[in-house]
Length: 131
Image 1: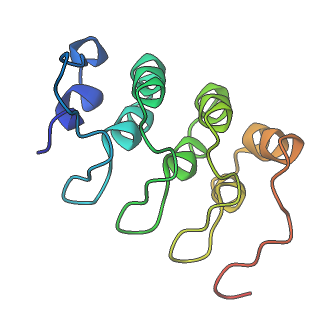
Image 2 (image 1 turned 45 degrees about the horizontal axis):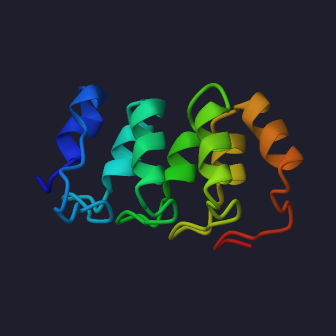
């Protein structure tokens, strides 16, 4: 596992950035999920914020083309989505199926998330691979 992946999954207090060392913020694990994606997936908002502040790419894609925003759209509450959008995450990023975070929120029946993404400007006209 590349550096930072395990701490972002388990204990976010383990995340630190050694002075003078280049951190691998934008590398993927076996599913090409970055440390930021792991932090979002495990709902570690503080860890995600630290990673973003240190240059983690919010639009890094996993093997399915999902970004951290796709993962956050499945989680109850909007704080992680808000954090990612504050760091210029692409609200209309499409995964390999053409699904956007809004599509994911609709599929998962996350009404609060759907409303939130619409308020933040998600495009309702983006078409998936099935059109």
